[in-house]
Length: 75
Image 1: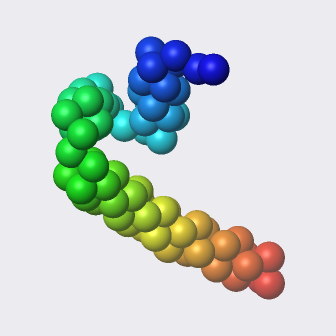
Image 2: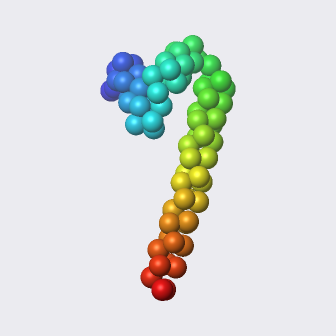
Image 3: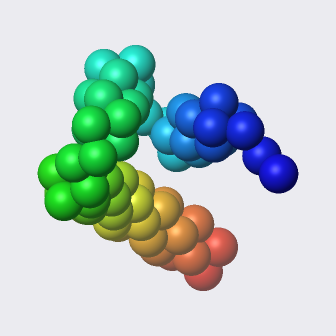
C-alpha cells in the first residue's frame, strides 16, 4: 500500500510535469493539504485554460507556416 508521502510526491511530480511553476505548485499543494478540493479544482481548470490558450495561439502560428510552405512549394 502506498504511503501518504508517496501520494504527495506523485501529486507534486504531476503538477511539475504539467508545467506548473513553483508558485502554482505550492498553492495547489496547500489547497490539497487543507482539503480545499473546490478551490484546487478551480486552480487546475484555470491553468488548463491558460495552456489551451497557448496551444491555440501556437496552432495559428503553425497554420501560417504551413500556408507559407504550401505557397512556396506551388511557385
